[in-house]
Amino acid sequence: MSFYSTKASVLRYRPAGSANNATTTSIWNTNGSFFTSDATTMGAVGSLVTAGATVGTVRTYMAIPVTAGTAFTVTVAYKQTSSTATLGKVALLGSDDMVLVAKEAGISTAAATGDTITYSGVAGHAYTSVKLFYGRENDISGTAGKASGGINITEIVRVQ
Image: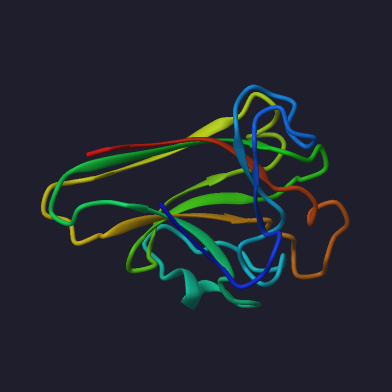
């Protein structure tokens, strides 16, 4: 796995049993949107993530390597960290930055019990990685409560 970030503390590793993670499972924690602005919304499936960003650009992502041409499945388990995060999306992007699949990640869909997102690539695909991406999706007016929270990434599984 590789990581890309232009800003410190946007993606944090929290070992099991640490001060910020009392569980027995290590986690990756997103501290804010992986875009440079919480007002940026995730594009639709099939859109180029940078082209759909009306405010801000990509500043962070995690890339899960895959072998081009070989069928694969990537599944990510995550939990929302804030009880006030009414909006948010988690997405998997191809190495071409196109949105492959996206899912709501607000408190009503990814609360403490968590959720998963999965993408399966068929044989013959051209991807070299699948990028994990999180956006807070605050609305443009900055409505209170929508720019809080992130997700705890509890498991990433690649089968290829």
